[in-house]
Amino acid sequence: MRTASILFGVSVFALVLLAAAVVLLAAAEWPRLAARLGADAFATRRRARRKARLRVIRTPPDESDEFARSVQRDLAALPTIDPRDADKRR
Image 1 (cartoon, helix red, strand yellow):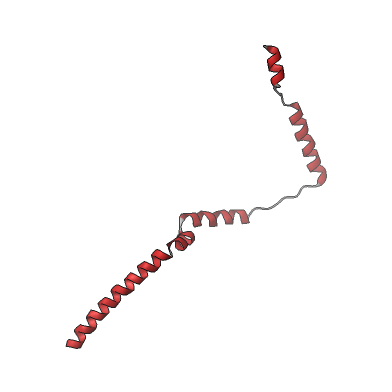
Image 2: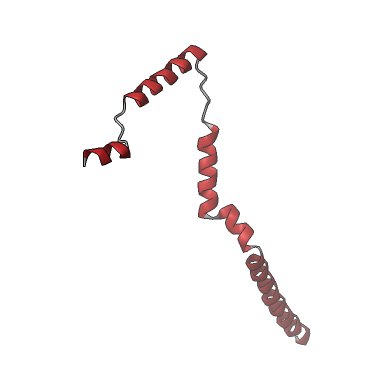
C-alpha cells in the first residue's frame, strides 16, 4: 500500500507541473496565437478573400481617352474663385 500512495503524490505533482508548463507555454506564445486566432486575423482573412475576388477590367484605349477628355471638360467647366477677384469686389 505504501508504494501506491507515493505514486499518487508523484502523479499529482507531475500533473501540476504539466499544467504549469502548458500555462507558461501559452503565455509565451500568446502574441503569435492572437495573431492567428484573434479578431484582427479574422478581419485580415476576410479582407484577403474579398481582394482575391477582385478583377482588373481593361478598357480599349479610345474609351479611356474619351473619358480623360470628358473629365478635362468637366474640370474646365467648374466655377473657380480667384482670391484676387474677391479683393477687387470689396
